[in-house]
Length: 220
Image 1 (spheres, one colour):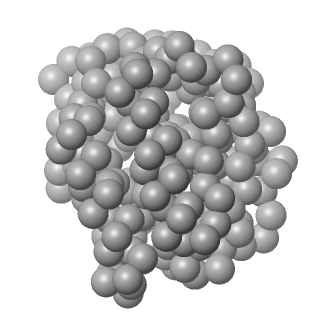
Image 2 (image 1 turned 180 degrees about the vertical axis):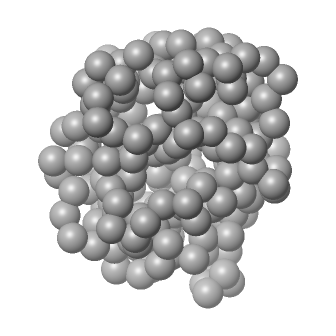
């Protein structure tokens, strides 16, 4: 399995999760795709033997798309945010749930995780999930989760185009449109380490726009 970590000034989070990945997945490769960090993100990544590269385009979506070009079709990939809010060990049970032509999402919106959300983020998350569930006639509990497991070819076939934080939304909804099975597994969720890069209003609007455009098939 390959761990894919999109980063932008995540030195605090990496110091939290990289030791756990190395402990529980000693044979796994770790690929860090960086958006131009100014802190010790690269230094810490190299310390733990990660493959590190700086993306050419801006935004999380661009970084993930560029990273997937470096991974073989048959590889199992675990993507998780590098801010320390996820426990890499949850990827193990997610990998066990992976089926052919499927994607496994780690669902944060479960009992015990509420304190890790701000009230506005929790309400916004639930509202966006409800909107997508109604429009796509399919219950989606946490399409915005930053931890997910899949085969590289499954993701590549989705032909993703999102450049920023709406990449998770595009990935999830395009799975529904393309007949890729979505499996949701409860995961742990903690308060992030370091400053957030997500703007609740600006990125929330982008996500809502992506939901509507995916529903009418604007992106093919």
